[in-house]
Length: 562
Image (cartoon, rainbow, N blue to C red; front, side):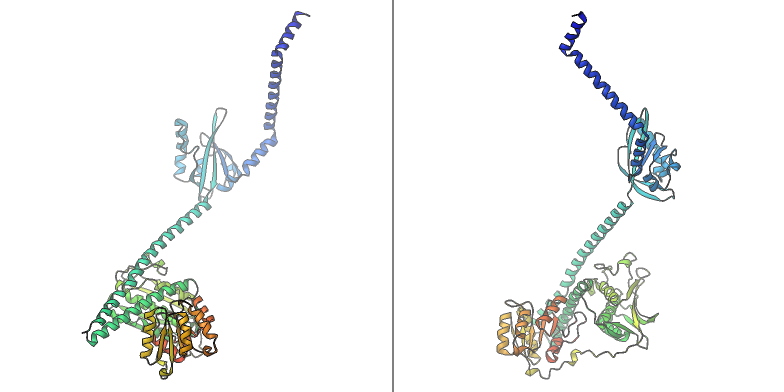
């Protein structure tokens, strides 16, 4: 064996040569792979694929050099800005920005190159872009830096965020509206508490007067007037609240028929007359001599006009002027209510018909009210396919409300005369037995006392089972029945009475605090003849007892035959 062979055997035996050869093979393999990658990168198809990826992303991609010159501009960027690639490459990118971004752009890059402090680079931010047509749009911009050799480049990825900004704006607007509504609601609730307490003070004082043993008849009459007036005020407040709820939820039903404007005005002036007279206003009424007809609910239309007249009276200083006019214009009935009052603030005018919105109440606070009358007015007018507008030249210049309703050419049917309270026949009162059922003892006994004073034979009980037993023993001609009763509710009492032949045709009237449409439906299904909501005018109740039907005497809660 030669010396050389001995050396090779020793190397192989130690593994040194084997390791060296394997390392050489690995290096050659890595070199071949790197060459293959380079050839792949240099292949035209690879560049086309890369360009396709860049051009089909949804975001605009713009590359610039350190001088701010555009080096690349993808298809998404062309769509965003309205420029073609040929129009942009080589130009300074700042022409894609409005002021102040246009003037500040070069300074940003220069500052970064000098100090390394990134104001834009590496930080996503919202900026404004400018299109070819000069229009601007909000966009989100993210800038990154990269190097090719010793050259520095910057890539900006931009996205149009117009839709997102619009959604954010809409969200902020709705939040502002919710805050405003919540604030108005709180103010309204505070006002409601104030208004509901206000009538209680004079009513309590009047009761104390009546308890005095040495008062004369004039003082007694005065106390009665105070209590009746304040009770009516309380009823009006509650009715307004219920009306707003019913009308907004669409649970109110209009009783339409041909109505002449003269009837509407007569009822409205009768309702608003007391406050107009109390404040010493002069009311000027200008109506056409010939009838002007509309298809509408007389009670509700009179309520609209009465609310407008009442508002005019409240917001006009003592001894003011109120003008009411009506006429036919272009096939419409046009009603105008104008006053010489305090007017409406221009900021409030667009929202004057909204719920919980009220003008400065300092002048009218003594007259009370919840500030929801105009909301009711607008809803009722719209339910009649009409419109209402408010005008005011300025605060202190008075205001005007204009209602327009579709007029009808001619009236073919004669309005049926509505039964009035004065038409109630009570000549047979002594022959009528009335059973009053109410778990409120004071309510039951006071109604019973009034009926007895009116000449009826009346008695009262306070729960459902007692009502059924009393009916069998007493055999009433009329039953005045509350709904919310212990033991058995009024619905069940009515059903059980109707199931007996003795009471199959006995008039049964619900006198209750439940006044929603669903409550009326249930009482009709249970067998009630009428549904009246508390507090009921005793005259209206006597009308039902004597005639078997409820007079339409309440302009708010419309009772009647079910």
